[in-house]
Length: 127
Image 1 (cartoon, helix red, strand yellow):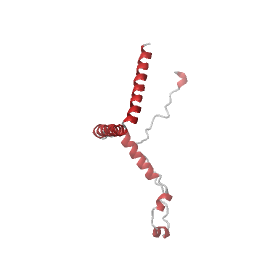
Image 2 (cartoon, helix red, strand yellow; image 1 turned 180 degrees about the vertical axis):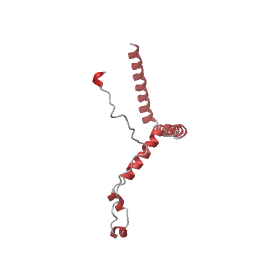
Image 3 (tube, rainbow, N blue to C red; image 1 turned 90 degrees about the vertical axis):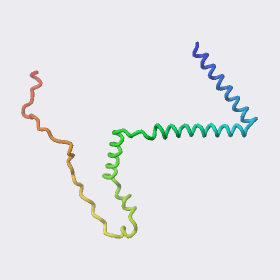
Image 4 (cartoon, rainbow, N blue to C red; image 1 turned 135 degrees about the horizontal axis):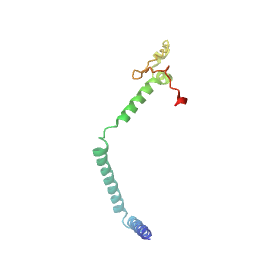
């Protein structure tokens, strides 16, 4: 019951605000527009202060820097040869095509094989 009274009160306040805005628009248009621009300007100024003081100086998370590094490496690895050949000038296009480099398969240095006791397996059925 109390909830219905609160929502009814809110609807009445919003309705009165709309009536006030419409009457202000038709009776005093120039002052209404200047007040509107001033409110928008103050809102933009408050947003800019909050953004530049609090949000902009946050250090990116360690995960985000790792992700950006991985994206950069992926782009370098899988770049499109057609897109790079278009950026050369006309003289470079007439020259002899460069043979593609052979892919060097590198083993990741942070991975290693751990030799286990493969010959000594437990018989799980006997447990």
